[in-house]
Length: 218
Ligand code: DC
Image (cartoon, rainbow, N blue to C red; front, side, top):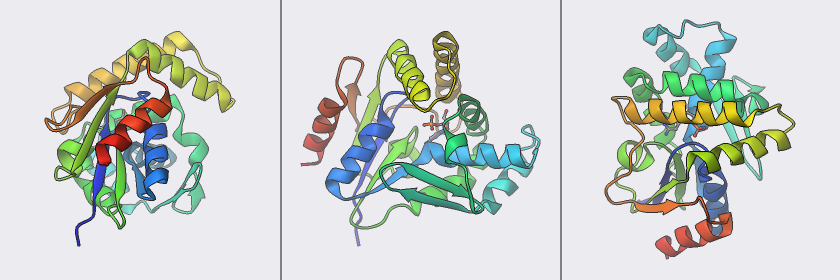
């Protein structure tokens, strides 16, 4: 049975999460936030005080972790039964996620976990390599980006709204460093699939982006 997939790739803070959730809701499809899988692994490693330089140890932790996703209005994630949702959004979690995501064995180890989300009636998958590596046969692909200044501003607002202390200049520096790492890594770097629709959301409202993506599907 063929299961349709829409992939939305792009750098952090481009609005992928919000757009993907809204589009998935409109279509009644499942939603995969692949970044949260790498983030969950980062948290699992911190909890076990694992050596971040030891790829074999990281892969072991990746294989052993039991993740549960509850994709209601807000994503709730449980790691080995414990709710880790609040820790997922932290910049420090994102930075470790980006570091371990550069390891080829870690990416291979997490591939099946991501592909398991492909279930009827369809899937919206958000990440860096959804259209290039995880679901290369997806019939609809989007590459969503925005200037780093706009992305830093959005991330700052998100964190403040969640009551997390934040500094705009630090966020901008971290975003640029993370972009560099995600784009320059050898395995599955952040890159636009040749058959993806390019959308720059710097000056677009979320609703406009959602409409453009839905037009692509229909
Ligand atoms: O989308 P995010 O900010 O939650 O992702 C956190 C990190 O995880 C990101 O900096 C790189 C990594 N990641 C990845 O390598 N591939 C994906 N498909 C999603 C995330």
